[in-house]
Length: 104
Image 1 (cartoon, one colour):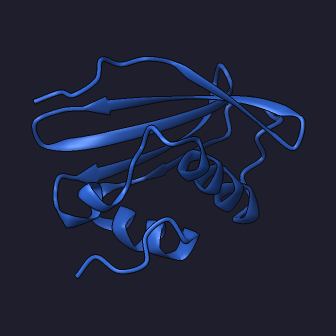
Image 2 (spheres, helix red, strand yellow):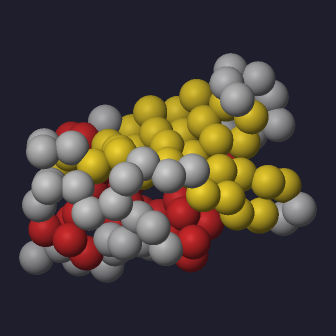
């Protein structure tokens, strides 16, 4: 059951505007953060303990995700710079980013 409709939200980090969209389906939650129209990071979470521990609509969570992607080398100022974190890696990625402490 979707709690929210897909809605574009905006945030400014270090003077650069980013936007993000959360898409919740029956099987997963997908967070996509854009810096340009063709430049984004996408993190896909399967429904489970991790998704209940993360509020994808909170700006501080999205800011942490974006800053972690930049730390890993995401070139958000360039076109066609895409990072996709699949569902099987997203929980560890979120732990490494500091979004969630422990899922158990």
